[in-house]
Image 1 (cartoon, rainbow, N blue to C red):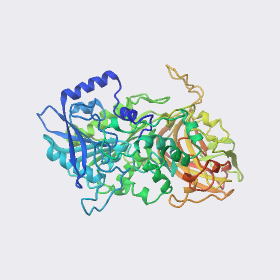
Image 2: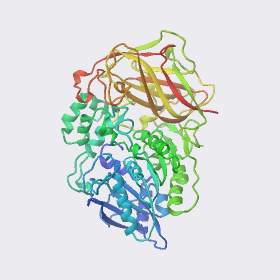
Image 3: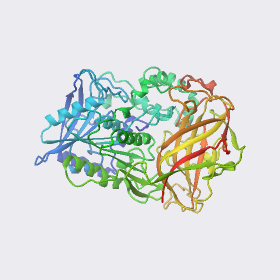
Image 4: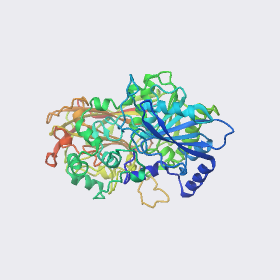
Length: 625
């Protein structure tokens, strides 16, 4: 999900085309080549879901159905009002499908009550036992029986929240469902997607998004009658969230009890049955349709969900037709632009265009129309740094080895274990002066922070920096990164942020043209960063305090990477205790942080150990030459 100034900007981005001219051309094409009808499809419990259907006017052949189920509205409403484009990109629209868009239960013009990432009911005993899988099944059943000239085959796709609804089509799938593409799918809202990372609230995203999306809708409404975007009284988001004082203050001042999601955050601070019930992974068994999971390595919202969904299907369905496509993209970047660059980093080729032409369109053509050929690898991965597509028979690749990158005294980083017996770095972290997640001033959380220059953070005394000597050969990472920290704190709780960074040579050329005057010499490109709430280091269900001054292990996984650190570059690791306002602040004392008052936030002295007995390190999945 995209936290933005207004909900409508998110909708505009979701369906945006590269230029106004292209948008106008596509709009004309839709009207000339498709007939739009609207239907309210009855679910097994009697609830009706509003559905917009675009049927090709050419009736010389039968067409498969491409379904997109969304909480973000199927706008525009009215059979005389047409979308400006159909499908994920223009070539898909021109290929010819019956495009179907549906407001999910409880959203916009559909009846019923909405539930965030609605729990799955594995053993349904009556027609009242509904979930997103049953709603999808009932929708498909109606479509294949009632839409004229369909060929009896259905595909489902969706990005982000619609990616979740794509995933939920798999358990007990309708026989007509032949191809499913969950793209950046919402998967686990406590461990790694959107609003929590390892139990840490992703504050800016959760507040910005839920301040509009979470407003209740008592009866079906069209967007013009829906909630408006939250108007931030302070445009600097760092200042806005810091001056609010605490998450509790934000709720009391702006939400009270009106936003159910925020009430649930306060009621379920730890991993419990509420969050476990909303994790679709356990239900991804007996998968029969062909599946193509798609995502971006620099996706600020759902990078976790992409890899977790693919791996869950793979583990629980050894014979399933399940593949992975992952590239150098932001959230939805594979269909929002040509993908030749992101932020300050150029990839040397239009990676998104390549994806559209070689993966998504052939996937649906082959499985829904029986046309062409589609013989992808198991894992189709774009590796940044070397800037090339690679095909692997597994993900992570089999042809890898685990190597340990050790923290060293004096800010060094090496694959050799340190031999000293007394070595650590000591510093003070102050939650009232938290480390920002990005340089400069932002009104809203940016997507570029996932790949941006980290030199601003390296200059702070509360960010510990470790880097290798200049690399004498390329090092390519393909797979998970594990943080193995050995630390102590004088507080009773702490967050730990680990960032893996590619440091460019000092003679790296600047971009040309260079309107923002970017200096690439010494650029610190963020490859992957992740946070861990320390009290969950041993259990997300049962948090534990730190014992002040005691040497303690904090181990956790970062989302997968695919990146080459080139010869002449350096590898860097930064460790810090705040990442604000991306993540909410830890008061650095053991408590329910949702109940923290401003007075609870306190300074703490931290140590990061790097000696022969307490060797902080990263475990890397290195691709063999």
